[in-house]
Image 1 (cartoon, rainbow, N blue to C red):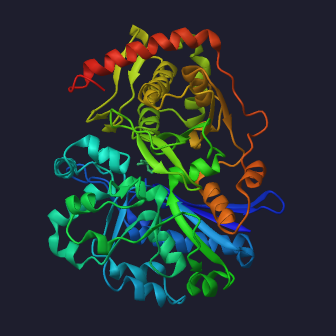
Image 2: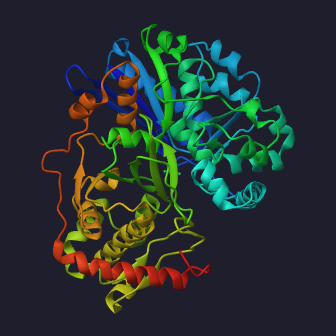
Image 3: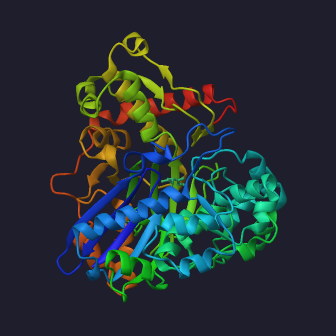
Length: 521
Ligand code: XUL
Protein backbone atom coordinates (compact mmCIF):
# COMPACT_ATOMS: atom_id res chain seq x y z
CA UNK A 1 0.00 0.00 0.00
CA UNK A 2 1.04 3.59 -0.56
CA UNK A 3 0.55 6.52 1.76
CA UNK A 4 0.04 10.14 0.70
CA UNK A 5 0.15 12.94 3.28
CA UNK A 6 -1.02 16.49 2.57
CA UNK A 7 0.09 19.27 4.92
CA UNK A 8 -2.34 22.04 4.03
CA UNK A 9 -3.26 25.37 5.60
CA UNK A 10 -6.02 24.11 7.88
CA UNK A 11 -5.31 20.40 8.24
CA UNK A 12 -2.99 17.44 7.79
CA UNK A 13 -4.55 14.59 5.81
CA UNK A 14 -3.48 11.04 4.98
CA UNK A 15 -4.84 8.87 2.16
CA UNK A 16 -3.81 5.22 1.93
CA UNK A 17 -4.23 3.44 -1.42
CA UNK A 18 -4.08 -0.22 -2.33
CA UNK A 19 -3.43 -0.51 -6.10
CA UNK A 20 -3.90 -4.30 -5.97
CA UNK A 21 -7.59 -3.87 -5.10
CA UNK A 22 -8.14 -0.29 -6.35
CA UNK A 23 -9.34 0.58 -2.85
CA UNK A 24 -8.70 3.48 -0.50
CA UNK A 25 -8.64 1.65 2.85
CA UNK A 26 -8.11 4.73 4.98
CA UNK A 27 -8.43 8.54 4.86
CA UNK A 28 -7.68 10.41 8.07
CA UNK A 29 -7.31 14.08 8.87
CA UNK A 30 -6.07 16.24 11.73
CA UNK A 31 -7.67 19.68 11.82
CA UNK A 32 -5.28 22.21 13.34
CA UNK A 33 -7.98 24.44 14.78
CA UNK A 34 -10.12 21.68 16.32
CA UNK A 35 -7.48 19.11 17.26
CA UNK A 36 -4.69 21.41 18.41
CA UNK A 37 -6.53 24.38 19.95
CA UNK A 38 -3.54 25.12 22.21
CA UNK A 39 -1.86 26.82 19.22
CA UNK A 40 -4.60 29.45 19.00
CA UNK A 41 -4.79 29.10 15.22
CA UNK A 42 -8.42 28.18 14.44
CA UNK A 43 -7.79 28.30 10.68
CA UNK A 44 -4.21 27.04 10.82
CA UNK A 45 -2.43 30.37 10.92
CA UNK A 46 -1.67 33.02 13.54
CA UNK A 47 -4.20 35.82 13.32
CA UNK A 48 -3.48 39.51 13.81
CA UNK A 49 -0.17 39.71 11.94
CA UNK A 50 0.89 43.25 11.03
CA UNK A 51 1.97 44.69 7.65
CA UNK A 52 0.43 41.76 5.78
CA UNK A 53 2.39 39.12 7.71
CA UNK A 54 0.70 35.73 8.00
CA UNK A 55 2.66 33.04 9.82
CA UNK A 56 2.00 29.57 11.14
CA UNK A 57 3.77 27.34 13.67
CA UNK A 58 6.02 24.48 12.54
CA UNK A 59 5.58 23.07 16.08
CA UNK A 60 1.85 22.71 15.35
CA UNK A 61 2.56 20.87 12.09
CA UNK A 62 4.87 18.47 13.96
CA UNK A 63 2.30 17.80 16.70
CA UNK A 64 -0.22 17.19 13.92
CA UNK A 65 2.14 14.66 12.31
CA UNK A 66 2.41 12.71 15.57
CA UNK A 67 -1.37 12.84 15.98
CA UNK A 68 -2.00 11.78 12.38
CA UNK A 69 0.31 8.77 12.69
CA UNK A 70 -1.22 7.72 16.01
CA UNK A 71 -4.68 7.84 14.37
CA UNK A 72 -3.39 5.95 11.33
CA UNK A 73 -1.78 3.28 13.53
CA UNK A 74 -5.09 2.82 15.36
CA UNK A 75 -7.05 2.55 12.10
CA UNK A 76 -4.79 0.39 9.93
CA UNK A 77 -1.72 -1.85 9.82
CA UNK A 78 1.00 0.63 8.87
CA UNK A 79 3.54 -2.19 8.31
CA UNK A 80 1.81 -2.73 4.95
CA UNK A 81 2.91 0.67 3.65
CA UNK A 82 5.61 0.30 1.00
CA UNK A 83 6.32 3.92 0.19
CA UNK A 84 5.23 7.39 1.44
CA UNK A 85 5.04 10.67 -0.49
CA UNK A 86 3.28 13.90 0.27
CA UNK A 87 2.38 17.49 -0.46
CA UNK A 88 2.25 20.78 1.37
CA UNK A 89 0.66 24.20 1.17
CA UNK A 90 2.90 26.02 -1.28
CA UNK A 91 5.45 28.82 -0.72
CA UNK A 92 5.63 28.64 3.13
CA UNK A 93 9.17 28.35 4.52
CA UNK A 94 10.87 26.88 7.60
CA UNK A 95 14.25 28.16 8.87
CA UNK A 96 16.60 25.73 10.65
CA UNK A 97 20.05 25.81 12.22
CA UNK A 98 22.99 23.42 11.93
CA UNK A 99 21.51 21.00 14.50
CA UNK A 100 18.53 20.08 12.29
CA UNK A 101 20.19 17.13 10.56
CA UNK A 102 21.52 15.55 13.78
CA UNK A 103 18.17 16.03 15.47
CA UNK A 104 16.45 14.22 12.59
CA UNK A 105 19.01 11.43 12.61
CA UNK A 106 18.58 10.78 16.34
CA UNK A 107 14.82 11.13 16.85
CA UNK A 108 13.69 9.25 19.96
CA UNK A 109 10.21 7.65 19.89
CA UNK A 110 9.92 8.34 23.64
CA UNK A 111 9.54 12.06 22.94
CA UNK A 112 7.41 14.12 20.55
CA UNK A 113 8.62 15.41 17.19
CA UNK A 114 7.91 18.98 18.22
CA UNK A 115 10.00 18.74 21.42
CA UNK A 116 12.95 17.31 19.53
CA UNK A 117 12.90 19.40 16.35
CA UNK A 118 11.67 22.89 17.25
CA UNK A 119 14.92 23.85 19.11
CA UNK A 120 16.52 23.85 15.62
CA UNK A 121 14.25 26.66 14.36
CA UNK A 122 16.05 29.96 13.77
CA UNK A 123 12.66 31.57 13.16
CA UNK A 124 10.00 30.24 15.53
CA UNK A 125 7.18 30.80 13.06
CA UNK A 126 6.92 30.17 9.33
CA UNK A 127 5.58 32.69 6.81
CA UNK A 128 2.90 31.01 4.69
CA UNK A 129 1.26 31.64 1.30
CA UNK A 130 -1.24 34.15 2.74
CA UNK A 131 1.58 36.55 3.67
CA UNK A 132 1.59 39.77 1.62
CA UNK A 133 4.31 41.63 3.55
CA UNK A 134 7.05 41.51 0.89
CA UNK A 135 6.07 44.21 -1.62
CA UNK A 136 9.41 46.03 -1.16
CA UNK A 137 11.41 42.81 -1.54
CA UNK A 138 9.53 41.89 -4.74
CA UNK A 139 10.38 45.33 -6.16
CA UNK A 140 14.07 44.92 -5.20
CA UNK A 141 14.37 41.46 -6.79
CA UNK A 142 12.57 42.68 -9.92
CA UNK A 143 14.87 45.71 -10.23
CA UNK A 144 17.99 43.56 -9.77
CA UNK A 145 16.89 41.27 -12.61
CA UNK A 146 15.97 44.15 -14.93
CA UNK A 147 12.17 43.95 -14.80
CA UNK A 148 9.19 41.65 -14.20
CA UNK A 149 9.38 39.99 -17.63
CA UNK A 150 12.86 38.66 -16.88
CA UNK A 151 11.88 37.26 -13.46
CA UNK A 152 8.89 35.62 -15.13
CA UNK A 153 10.93 34.24 -18.05
CA UNK A 154 13.33 32.56 -15.64
CA UNK A 155 11.10 31.42 -12.78
CA UNK A 156 7.64 31.12 -14.43
CA UNK A 157 6.15 33.94 -12.35
CA UNK A 158 6.85 37.62 -11.75
CA UNK A 159 8.11 38.34 -8.19
CA UNK A 160 5.13 37.48 -5.98
CA UNK A 161 4.66 38.52 -2.34
CA UNK A 162 3.84 35.03 -1.05
CA UNK A 163 6.61 33.28 -2.99
CA UNK A 164 9.51 32.00 -0.94
CA UNK A 165 12.35 34.07 -2.43
CA UNK A 166 10.85 37.45 -1.45
CA UNK A 167 9.94 35.95 1.96
CA UNK A 168 13.55 34.84 2.49
CA UNK A 169 14.80 38.29 1.48
CA UNK A 170 12.54 39.94 4.05
CA UNK A 171 13.82 37.62 6.80
CA UNK A 172 17.41 38.44 5.80
CA UNK A 173 16.64 42.18 5.98
CA UNK A 174 14.59 42.10 9.21
CA UNK A 175 16.81 39.69 11.20
CA UNK A 176 20.22 39.31 9.51
CA UNK A 177 21.74 37.56 12.55
CA UNK A 178 19.05 34.84 12.54
CA UNK A 179 19.40 34.55 8.76
CA UNK A 180 23.15 34.03 9.22
CA UNK A 181 22.48 31.31 11.84
CA UNK A 182 20.15 29.54 9.40
CA UNK A 183 21.82 26.51 7.86
CA UNK A 184 18.82 25.10 5.98
CA UNK A 185 15.69 26.70 4.51
CA UNK A 186 12.90 24.25 3.71
CA UNK A 187 9.49 24.61 2.13
CA UNK A 188 6.58 23.25 4.19
CA UNK A 189 6.64 20.29 1.79
CA UNK A 190 10.36 19.49 2.05
CA UNK A 191 10.33 20.12 5.83
CA UNK A 192 7.62 17.51 6.41
CA UNK A 193 9.31 15.10 3.98
CA UNK A 194 12.61 15.55 5.84
CA UNK A 195 11.02 14.70 9.19
CA UNK A 196 9.55 11.49 7.75
CA UNK A 197 12.81 10.54 6.04
CA UNK A 198 14.91 11.36 9.13
CA UNK A 199 17.24 13.57 7.08
CA UNK A 200 17.13 16.83 5.12
CA UNK A 201 15.70 15.91 1.70
CA UNK A 202 15.34 17.67 -1.66
CA UNK A 203 12.75 20.18 -2.85
CA UNK A 204 10.74 18.92 -5.84
CA UNK A 205 10.32 20.84 -9.13
CA UNK A 206 6.58 21.30 -8.56
CA UNK A 207 6.82 23.17 -5.25
CA UNK A 208 10.31 24.55 -5.99
CA UNK A 209 8.85 26.57 -8.89
CA UNK A 210 6.79 28.55 -6.37
CA UNK A 211 9.87 30.27 -4.94
CA UNK A 212 10.98 32.76 -7.64
CA UNK A 213 14.35 31.00 -7.35
CA UNK A 214 14.16 27.99 -9.67
CA UNK A 215 15.04 28.45 -13.33
CA UNK A 216 12.42 26.50 -15.28
CA UNK A 217 14.68 26.02 -18.28
CA UNK A 218 17.71 24.64 -16.43
CA UNK A 219 15.64 23.08 -13.60
CA UNK A 220 18.34 24.34 -11.21
CA UNK A 221 18.58 27.25 -8.74
CA UNK A 222 19.03 30.44 -10.78
CA UNK A 223 22.30 32.15 -9.70
CA UNK A 224 21.04 35.70 -10.46
CA UNK A 225 17.75 35.19 -8.63
CA UNK A 226 19.65 33.74 -5.64
CA UNK A 227 22.00 36.70 -5.59
CA UNK A 228 19.12 39.21 -5.81
CA UNK A 229 17.37 37.44 -2.90
CA UNK A 230 19.89 37.03 -0.07
CA UNK A 231 23.63 36.37 0.44
CA UNK A 232 24.89 32.82 0.75
CA UNK A 233 21.48 31.42 -0.17
CA UNK A 234 22.66 28.53 -2.34
CA UNK A 235 24.30 26.84 0.66
CA UNK A 236 21.10 27.07 2.69
CA UNK A 237 18.81 25.53 0.06
CA UNK A 238 18.26 21.81 -0.40
CA UNK A 239 19.00 20.31 -3.82
CA UNK A 240 16.20 19.93 -6.39
CA UNK A 241 14.78 16.63 -7.63
CA UNK A 242 11.67 15.08 -9.18
CA UNK A 243 8.86 14.35 -6.69
CA UNK A 244 9.09 10.63 -7.48
CA UNK A 245 12.75 10.38 -6.38
CA UNK A 246 13.11 7.84 -3.58
CA UNK A 247 15.06 9.33 -0.67
CA UNK A 248 15.70 6.16 1.34
CA UNK A 249 13.79 4.47 4.14
CA UNK A 250 11.54 6.13 6.65
CA UNK A 251 12.99 7.44 9.96
CA UNK A 252 13.26 4.83 12.73
CA UNK A 253 11.06 7.13 14.83
CA UNK A 254 7.98 6.16 12.78
CA UNK A 255 8.97 2.49 12.78
CA UNK A 256 9.39 2.34 16.56
CA UNK A 257 6.43 4.50 17.46
CA UNK A 258 3.76 3.77 14.84
CA UNK A 259 4.64 0.37 13.37
CA UNK A 260 5.83 1.29 9.87
CA UNK A 261 8.05 -1.40 8.37
CA UNK A 262 11.78 -0.61 8.55
CA UNK A 263 11.83 -1.18 4.77
CA UNK A 264 9.15 1.46 4.11
CA UNK A 265 10.65 4.03 1.71
CA UNK A 266 9.87 7.69 1.15
CA UNK A 267 9.79 9.90 -1.93
CA UNK A 268 9.51 13.70 -1.86
CA UNK A 269 6.64 16.00 -0.93
CA UNK A 270 5.45 18.37 -3.68
CA UNK A 271 3.07 21.38 -3.51
CA UNK A 272 -0.59 20.77 -2.75
CA UNK A 273 -1.67 22.06 -6.17
CA UNK A 274 0.81 19.94 -8.16
CA UNK A 275 -0.25 16.91 -6.08
CA UNK A 276 -3.93 17.70 -6.76
CA UNK A 277 -3.18 17.74 -10.50
CA UNK A 278 -2.07 14.10 -10.09
CA UNK A 279 -4.93 13.20 -7.73
CA UNK A 280 -7.50 14.66 -10.12
CA UNK A 281 -6.15 12.54 -12.98
CA UNK A 282 -5.32 15.69 -14.91
CA UNK A 283 -1.58 15.36 -15.60
CA UNK A 284 -2.06 15.43 -19.38
CA UNK A 285 -3.16 18.64 -21.19
CA UNK A 286 -6.90 18.97 -21.90
CA UNK A 287 -8.39 18.92 -18.42
CA UNK A 288 -8.81 21.86 -16.13
CA UNK A 289 -8.97 21.53 -12.38
CA UNK A 290 -10.67 23.92 -10.01
CA UNK A 291 -9.83 23.31 -6.37
CA UNK A 292 -12.03 25.03 -3.81
CA UNK A 293 -9.96 25.34 -0.65
CA UNK A 294 -8.90 28.06 1.77
CA UNK A 295 -7.71 29.65 -1.46
CA UNK A 296 -9.35 28.64 -4.73
CA UNK A 297 -6.98 27.48 -7.44
CA UNK A 298 -7.39 26.94 -11.17
CA UNK A 299 -4.80 24.76 -12.85
CA UNK A 300 -3.98 22.56 -15.81
CA UNK A 301 -1.12 20.52 -17.26
CA UNK A 302 0.81 22.38 -19.98
CA UNK A 303 2.99 21.03 -22.76
CA UNK A 304 5.49 23.92 -22.34
CA UNK A 305 6.18 26.70 -19.82
CA UNK A 306 3.86 29.40 -21.28
CA UNK A 307 3.61 32.42 -18.94
CA UNK A 308 0.87 34.94 -18.06
CA UNK A 309 1.61 38.41 -19.55
CA UNK A 310 -0.41 40.03 -16.72
CA UNK A 311 1.68 38.27 -14.08
CA UNK A 312 -1.17 36.63 -12.13
CA UNK A 313 -0.68 33.08 -13.40
CA UNK A 314 2.26 30.85 -12.55
CA UNK A 315 4.10 27.94 -14.10
CA UNK A 316 5.14 25.05 -11.86
CA UNK A 317 6.70 21.64 -12.52
CA UNK A 318 4.19 18.83 -13.07
CA UNK A 319 5.19 16.15 -10.50
CA UNK A 320 5.04 13.41 -13.12
CA UNK A 321 6.87 15.40 -15.84
CA UNK A 322 6.35 18.56 -17.89
CA UNK A 323 4.71 21.71 -16.57
CA UNK A 324 1.46 23.00 -15.13
CA UNK A 325 -0.16 26.42 -14.93
CA UNK A 326 -1.70 27.69 -11.74
CA UNK A 327 -3.74 30.71 -10.77
CA UNK A 328 -4.50 31.24 -7.10
CA UNK A 329 -7.40 33.26 -5.68
CA UNK A 330 -6.99 34.19 -2.03
CA UNK A 331 -10.70 34.84 -1.46
CA UNK A 332 -11.80 31.20 -1.71
CA UNK A 333 -13.35 29.55 1.34
CA UNK A 334 -12.21 32.59 3.29
CA UNK A 335 -14.81 34.65 1.38
CA UNK A 336 -17.50 31.92 1.40
CA UNK A 337 -17.12 31.55 5.18
CA UNK A 338 -17.18 35.33 5.67
CA UNK A 339 -20.44 35.73 3.71
CA UNK A 340 -22.04 32.71 5.37
CA UNK A 341 -21.23 34.17 8.79
CA UNK A 342 -22.37 37.64 7.78
CA UNK A 343 -25.74 36.25 6.60
CA UNK A 344 -26.02 33.90 9.60
CA UNK A 345 -26.53 30.84 7.33
CA UNK A 346 -25.49 27.24 7.93
CA UNK A 347 -23.74 25.34 5.11
CA UNK A 348 -26.95 23.55 4.08
CA UNK A 349 -28.68 26.89 3.49
CA UNK A 350 -25.58 28.26 1.74
CA UNK A 351 -25.39 25.24 -0.61
CA UNK A 352 -29.12 25.43 -1.35
CA UNK A 353 -29.00 29.11 -2.28
CA UNK A 354 -27.78 28.65 -5.90
CA UNK A 355 -30.83 26.49 -6.69
CA UNK A 356 -33.39 28.81 -5.11
CA UNK A 357 -31.88 31.86 -6.86
CA UNK A 358 -31.50 30.33 -10.33
CA UNK A 359 -33.92 32.87 -11.81
CA UNK A 360 -31.37 35.61 -11.01
CA UNK A 361 -28.43 33.99 -12.87
CA UNK A 362 -25.94 36.61 -14.08
CA UNK A 363 -28.16 39.49 -13.04
CA UNK A 364 -26.36 40.96 -10.00
CA UNK A 365 -22.63 41.43 -9.62
CA UNK A 366 -20.35 41.04 -6.63
CA UNK A 367 -16.61 41.62 -6.61
CA UNK A 368 -16.09 38.71 -4.20
CA UNK A 369 -13.23 40.11 -2.15
CA UNK A 370 -13.70 40.04 1.63
CA UNK A 371 -9.98 40.56 2.27
CA UNK A 372 -6.86 41.35 0.20
CA UNK A 373 -6.80 39.54 -3.13
CA UNK A 374 -3.85 38.33 -5.19
CA UNK A 375 -5.70 37.76 -8.50
CA UNK A 376 -6.12 40.60 -9.25
CA UNK A 377 -3.73 42.01 -6.65
CA UNK A 378 -5.72 44.43 -4.54
CA UNK A 379 -6.21 45.43 -0.92
CA UNK A 380 -10.02 45.22 -0.83
CA UNK A 381 -11.75 45.87 2.46
CA UNK A 382 -15.04 44.22 1.51
CA UNK A 383 -17.14 43.02 -1.40
CA UNK A 384 -18.44 45.50 -4.00
CA UNK A 385 -22.08 45.06 -5.09
CA UNK A 386 -23.90 46.18 -8.22
CA UNK A 387 -27.45 45.16 -9.05
CA UNK A 388 -31.13 45.17 -8.15
CA UNK A 389 -32.45 46.96 -5.03
CA UNK A 390 -33.39 43.59 -3.46
CA UNK A 391 -29.79 42.46 -3.91
CA UNK A 392 -28.17 45.69 -2.77
CA UNK A 393 -30.30 45.79 0.37
CA UNK A 394 -29.16 42.27 1.34
CA UNK A 395 -32.77 41.32 2.09
CA UNK A 396 -32.53 38.06 0.11
CA UNK A 397 -29.50 36.04 1.30
CA UNK A 398 -29.75 33.58 -1.63
CA UNK A 399 -29.07 36.44 -4.08
CA UNK A 400 -25.96 37.36 -2.12
CA UNK A 401 -24.65 33.79 -2.12
CA UNK A 402 -25.30 33.42 -5.88
CA UNK A 403 -23.58 36.73 -6.65
CA UNK A 404 -20.56 35.77 -4.50
CA UNK A 405 -20.14 32.42 -6.26
CA UNK A 406 -20.75 33.90 -9.71
CA UNK A 407 -18.24 36.64 -8.89
CA UNK A 408 -15.62 34.09 -7.81
CA UNK A 409 -15.99 32.10 -11.04
CA UNK A 410 -16.30 35.13 -13.34
CA UNK A 411 -13.06 36.39 -11.79
CA UNK A 412 -11.52 32.97 -12.43
CA UNK A 413 -12.77 32.93 -16.06
CA UNK A 414 -11.43 36.44 -16.66
CA UNK A 415 -8.00 35.74 -15.22
CA UNK A 416 -7.48 32.37 -16.90
CA UNK A 417 -8.00 33.68 -20.44
CA UNK A 418 -4.23 33.99 -20.95
CA UNK A 419 -3.93 30.20 -20.93
CA UNK A 420 -5.77 30.21 -24.26
CA UNK A 421 -7.66 27.00 -23.50
CA UNK A 422 -11.40 26.65 -23.84
CA UNK A 423 -12.49 24.79 -20.73
CA UNK A 424 -14.29 21.72 -22.08
CA UNK A 425 -14.10 19.47 -19.08
CA UNK A 426 -13.52 20.82 -15.61
CA UNK A 427 -12.74 18.57 -12.67
CA UNK A 428 -13.63 20.18 -9.39
CA UNK A 429 -12.51 19.31 -5.88
CA UNK A 430 -12.58 20.68 -2.35
CA UNK A 431 -15.15 21.10 0.40
CA UNK A 432 -17.48 23.45 -1.48
CA UNK A 433 -17.75 21.04 -4.44
CA UNK A 434 -19.55 18.26 -2.57
CA UNK A 435 -23.13 19.43 -3.13
CA UNK A 436 -24.46 20.34 -6.58
CA UNK A 437 -25.11 24.06 -5.95
CA UNK A 438 -21.57 25.40 -6.35
CA UNK A 439 -20.44 23.05 -9.19
CA UNK A 440 -23.56 23.91 -11.23
CA UNK A 441 -22.60 27.59 -11.09
CA UNK A 442 -19.10 26.62 -12.29
CA UNK A 443 -20.64 24.65 -15.20
CA UNK A 444 -22.90 27.58 -16.12
CA UNK A 445 -20.28 30.35 -15.81
CA UNK A 446 -17.64 28.41 -17.80
CA UNK A 447 -20.22 26.72 -20.09
CA UNK A 448 -18.35 23.44 -19.59
CA UNK A 449 -19.19 20.06 -18.07
CA UNK A 450 -18.04 19.64 -14.52
CA UNK A 451 -17.02 16.33 -12.89
CA UNK A 452 -16.20 15.36 -9.35
CA UNK A 453 -14.04 12.42 -8.32
CA UNK A 454 -14.91 9.82 -5.71
CA UNK A 455 -11.98 10.70 -3.43
CA UNK A 456 -12.31 14.12 -1.90
CA UNK A 457 -8.73 14.67 -0.65
CA UNK A 458 -7.21 15.28 -4.08
CA UNK A 459 -3.79 16.45 -2.86
CA UNK A 460 -3.27 13.54 -0.45
CA UNK A 461 -4.56 11.10 -3.07
CA UNK A 462 -2.18 12.63 -5.63
CA UNK A 463 0.67 12.19 -3.15
CA UNK A 464 -0.27 8.52 -2.66
CA UNK A 465 -0.25 8.08 -6.46
CA UNK A 466 3.18 9.77 -6.62
CA UNK A 467 4.37 7.26 -3.99
CA UNK A 468 3.09 4.37 -6.13
CA UNK A 469 4.76 5.80 -9.26
CA UNK A 470 8.01 6.18 -7.28
CA UNK A 471 7.74 2.46 -6.51
CA UNK A 472 7.49 1.67 -10.24
CA UNK A 473 3.72 1.46 -10.78
CA UNK A 474 2.16 2.76 -14.03
CA UNK A 475 0.37 6.10 -13.65
CA UNK A 476 -2.17 5.30 -16.37
CA UNK A 477 -3.46 2.20 -14.60
CA UNK A 478 -3.44 3.96 -11.22
CA UNK A 479 -5.48 6.72 -12.83
CA UNK A 480 -8.12 4.32 -14.05
CA UNK A 481 -8.42 2.80 -10.56
CA UNK A 482 -8.40 5.97 -8.48
CA UNK A 483 -9.24 9.01 -10.63
CA UNK A 484 -12.62 8.17 -12.11
CA UNK A 485 -15.52 10.61 -11.92
CA UNK A 486 -17.94 9.61 -9.16
CA UNK A 487 -21.05 7.98 -10.63
CA UNK A 488 -23.73 10.58 -11.31
CA UNK A 489 -21.38 13.41 -10.37
CA UNK A 490 -21.20 15.10 -13.80
CA UNK A 491 -23.09 18.34 -14.26
CA UNK A 492 -23.83 19.88 -17.65
CA UNK A 493 -24.01 23.64 -18.31
CA UNK A 494 -27.34 25.30 -19.03
CA UNK A 495 -26.59 26.50 -22.57
CA UNK A 496 -29.27 29.20 -22.35
CA UNK A 497 -27.07 30.91 -19.73
CA UNK A 498 -24.07 31.17 -22.13
CA UNK A 499 -24.88 34.67 -23.48
CA UNK A 500 -26.04 35.83 -20.04
CA UNK A 501 -22.69 34.99 -18.44
CA UNK A 502 -20.78 36.38 -21.45
CA UNK A 503 -22.52 39.68 -20.76
CA UNK A 504 -21.95 39.35 -16.99
CA UNK A 505 -18.23 38.76 -17.67
CA UNK A 506 -18.00 42.06 -19.57
CA UNK A 507 -19.84 43.94 -16.81
CA UNK A 508 -17.67 42.25 -14.16
CA UNK A 509 -14.50 43.35 -15.96
CA UNK A 510 -15.76 46.94 -16.22
CA UNK A 511 -16.72 47.03 -12.53
CA UNK A 512 -13.35 45.60 -11.55
CA UNK A 513 -11.52 48.19 -13.66
CA UNK A 514 -13.56 50.98 -12.13
CA UNK A 515 -12.90 49.83 -8.58
CA UNK A 516 -9.22 48.85 -8.73
CA UNK A 517 -7.11 51.94 -8.28
CA UNK A 518 -4.57 50.79 -10.87
CA UNK A 519 -7.30 51.13 -13.49
CA UNK A 520 -6.86 47.58 -14.76
CA UNK A 521 -7.25 44.16 -13.17
C1 XUL B 1 -0.81 28.53 -4.59
C2 XUL B 1 -1.13 28.99 -3.22
C3 XUL B 1 -2.11 28.22 -2.41
C4 XUL B 1 -1.39 27.34 -1.42
C5 XUL B 1 -2.32 26.87 -0.32
O1 XUL B 1 0.06 29.39 -5.27
O2 XUL B 1 -0.58 29.93 -2.73
O3 XUL B 1 -2.99 27.47 -3.20
O4 XUL B 1 -0.76 26.28 -2.07
O5 XUL B 1 -3.05 25.81 -0.61
